[in-house]
Length: 307
Figure 1 (tube, rainbow, N blue to C red):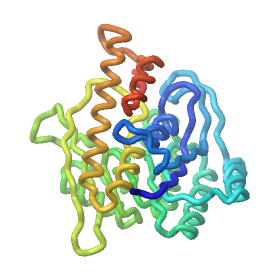
Figure 2: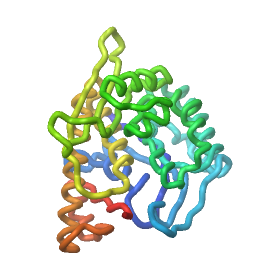
Figure 3: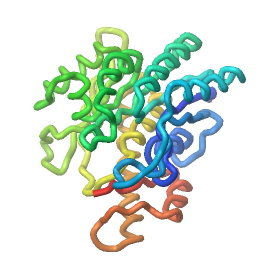
Figure 4: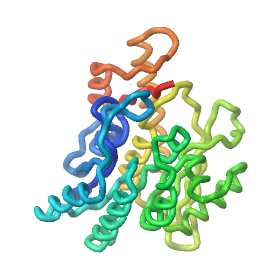
């Protein structure tokens, strides 16, 4: 039987909706429909508090700076409960906050050299102007070098590496570059590379050296879901972290189970949305009854993105 696994999630928090910590915490505490509080003990610290996720035309919130976050973390240290096996971070808007996260990663790794740090990338919103452009150098130069697992999509991988991806060969070269920056595991969660199965499929790629001359490389094709969601990147990173804990030496199995869960969640979200609002799929947060049904079945119902 597995021992207890302690996870610290440092992500944004929304009052309404399911992104950031609201999309990550429940999957970290559930597996195959069963609560696993005995083996996964998750704690969360907000990087940014928002009324709604930033795809809305109007939202309010507060950005935590390094001093405010340091106070939260010091509260954990004083009580001697700052001992973790995994650290998961995501969306933030403040450079000093990111620098503090890096310091905390180093401190936690000194306490536990086996700690795994997974970064849930949220750079795509640069296109929509709610992630400051000046954060990218901080991610490249400070965050990525201390991360163990990164899960960028194609666009984010291109931003981090400074190279465009037009083929799988170029994608593998970019993943090699990202490995050289520090992370042990790199998963490009989705890409627009052509699939042999046609335009209805997305390609995901993963790469992880196993400590010898052999490198695990995976390639997965996933059927596209004809809808826009938010929180999928946060959910993917959380699921991959959980399945990596279960299968630390098998990236293929961890990614297969992550993608399988993602597909089930997205399809169920669509079915619930159609049942709530028949006809074409608009922007529609799924209602509480559907969410509770999803929780009982070990699934997580996401929110449709704003068109």
